[in-house]
Picture 1: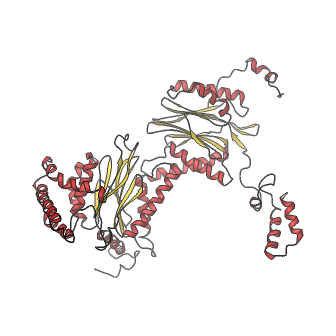
Picture 2: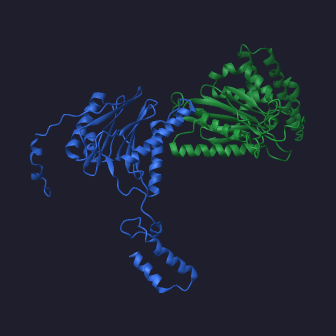
Picture 3: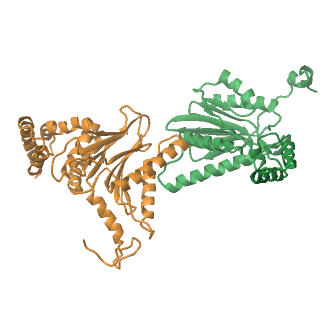
Length: 277
Length: 303
């Protein structure tokens, strides 16, 4: 729609020199690939020539990350899949990573963007070490920093395509927060990203307490992971668990959960689901 | 002043291995009126002597608030001090914005020192002519730092800079052992007594001195945690009660304090006498012009 009106202008032969320059310049630039799909957006974006350099769609992505506070600290859980569309492409992607001594971040969404985020955080950790004063970013500070980065990138219309959970213990206090690709951020005593928001958090709301023991909290996470594994196509039965307490941080080796596929509901799932096949 | 052929350029070494321009900048700090800082386990207190350019002018401010948890007292070129305070303020606000937490005091001081150092190694620059006492409270507790035009910085439990600061330093050296467990009130008192030592003539009034405090709020959690007593500047009417307290409490405290010998008692007693004299003078003749002069009488007391 825009290009037709512009070419119409060009045909009309503007008398003023300045206007003539404008109208000849703009159609020439629209020859390049328009940045915004649909081509109906404002012309300021269309003026930029060449292919889009920002993320239009995430490619290799991780699914849900779950996090719960418990008696002694925080637990995070995620599977190790990096899926490429419906292909279970990379099966050993570590999506839970340490930041300093007392913080762990877990990411869902674009894996390459998470690698970039980790390079930012690792740089901060190195800088802290170089100061030599023993200070490290607290979980709250890491979260705040990520909020700024994520929101800044969304303001450039070039978001980092992730939802990142930040968990840690600092000064005897547990911390659990999340930030997503548009910069929305909040804290809670239990959190989940992606599908986990729909499938795990209802379970958390019903069963989670901040004074849970470690064993209870792990059992709750396993229960939620199992539900996610049954219902989320983009997940695999290979998980990591991160434990953050005042003593420090541990990220487990990958492990599998026992599953049960003989439920009658699983026998012919299409039978009760209208509209599926 | 002593001059030589190696002092025209900041970056030129003397054969003796000295950088004279930087040493001159350090001298500029000593020309400024005195600033004193000291800390306890919970608080840091700054105290300064202010100068008025003339009888008609106001007293020049020397204490600047940088952030809620941090402030500075300066000695030397006031204008240079404002440049550094602006830099520190912007660093603090950037840190608060990005991390939503207060800037660590030691790191800020180090950045200021690095900034000062650059001026000592560039031929087209000049060193800052100002020394800072930085008082702050962060996650590692209360801190007192000194920065120099040379780019050096030090952390202290108590320190004094500026003209006649040696007298204040002597006071602090004599007393610093007791500072750790001091209450805020006692700390302010020590600060005022220390800065008083550096007065050349006249006496300590609410006009020519100002004090600032920062630290952990009472019941404000563990070390570095919880609520803080925000950096607050006490001057004019706010500092008057503390100045009055100096005179009122000097005798009783001296009596209580065991290691306070006659040396301490001696100035205390005449002070009391002087106070009454002063009161009579002010009440009697009402000779306004004489008030400054009246302060001049303080000199014999200090000896």
